[in-house]
Length: 465
Image 1 (cartoon, helix red, strand yellow):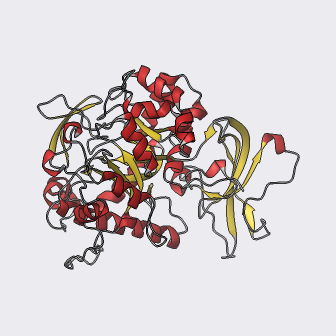
Image 2: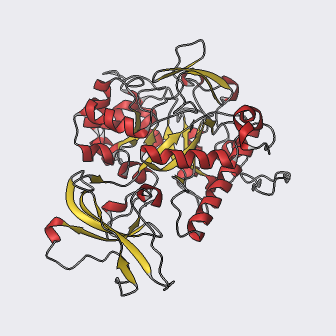
Image 3: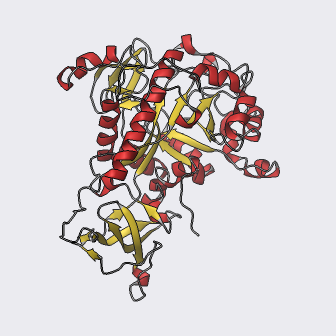
């Protein structure tokens, strides 16, 4: 669970505990060994940090008890259906020495990292050995091994869940990549169920974030204009472009489920709400029939006015993608989508809440003053994203983003030969630190923007009973 320490029953990714959780062995196979983290500062839902301790099942990562310093002389709070019995015992306690114990970060917009591009559809799945992977990847396309490599590597920057994100792509690319990532997610879930020591599985692979191709062409940013179009037939166009629920020819690779992409593969779709058919598509995606999957619709790469933003929210949109970037700037007579952040009363009168908004806080995409202004206008709606592309973690040079070439210099990523920003190359922990510096918020408040808030966007937070 992405909101584990802020709930009453929850799960912490075991990858986040791998450095300190030790699995013990015993002749009694039914005995469960527990790890107790003591002397920690635990993140709360209001951003405060309260001293306390928690107990974790070492084999599953499930947090089964939390006790705060104010409860030291009270019986332990049991957060599971079953009390701890004689078959469970505390292994070596871990003294956190006053350090913060927080839920792992959730990145809902990650285009790739460590040389791997989630929009790389390639041609056919490649069977080359790992030594040739770097040379063959651009031709062979994304592989399940690549997805697991990203998931494992992300943990070093505190990310324990992420939405693999695709830029606007060809229809063939969607038809290949969506089932591939679904298969990776299923394999990961199976490993988590089968393995008692699952610390090497890495960050949880969530549903996909499809950023495009339903954009205003003038706001496409680094997206390939060949793929940009309007969802003129509403949800029918969306399904046609992504290849949803369409039969495909069976592939020869037994390790990959090449069935048709499904709506269940998708967590977020970013689109421009002013386009023909966009509002109908938004309503269909966010208010499906009882047997269909609910998708988060985000407004982005758009020339939408303030009024068109209100319409989008009325039809089910709940998020603004990388605020300030690829949208109309705020003007005192034409506030655009940015004006929605300060429209609490207006939206409440319509029966709606203000949307969440994502920010790329790399110090390049958005000026620190604008970051602070947005956060102070709607602090509970702020969601930090990296919008990282494949060059994250690789250093300066020329790298790929979908079909496009991107030049990296320092923290700046631009389309080769232009000044157009093409995603970022900073990690989530860096974004959190810079966000705190830019806004002067507390450490806990900054952590919420990378943990609880994205969990709320995806409707995956665990609420108190």
